[in-house]
Image 1: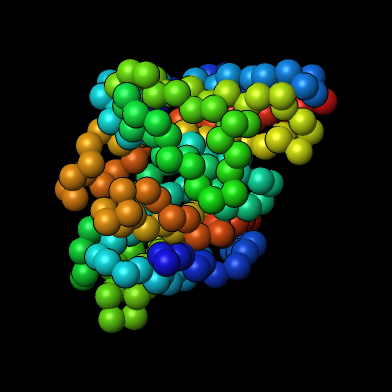
Image 2 (image 1 turned 120 degrees about the vertical axis):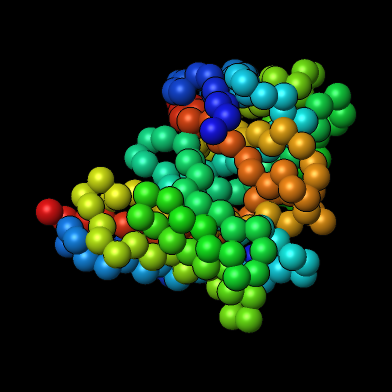
Length: 113
Length: 118
């Protein structure tokens, strides 16, 4: 079945450091891929998405490219801020499975001043 | 983006009582709503998928008689935790989509409900 695997956290970085959070997926069809962010005590917010191979999603300085050949959707940001501290979830949605989201285990990011 | 409102944000109930959580799409019609459960520092576990006007589809291992889901209108779905016990304490999150076609890929999330059963 479909699944998503993320790098384990927590990830601790200094402000202005470069961020990479790895995400790989397994899917039988042609899924759409997403990154969601969750701040403490809150629900999830969509950060970015890509719906087909080689698409790049971007938002608020974050980027991720849909790589079909490596089944990956790694999240990157060139210079993190303290306000980026949160939990990041990689997810996929497969239309053939009713469009439900399958989430990775989440990666906690802590950015220190 | 579209807004999904979940209520209440926090609820404390006594063991053995039932609790209802509401999920509303405020500015779009949600043909499909999803209910997730999240344990501390863990990922979201899909509990069930509900389509307006039909019975919910529960994921394997989720007790349908314990977690009653109703999706009676295009803007409202409810999750009722019946005869709650301390092990049901968790963070419950709903999400909603406005269509089922392949181009409609984005789900919008509510802010979550922290349930504590004492």
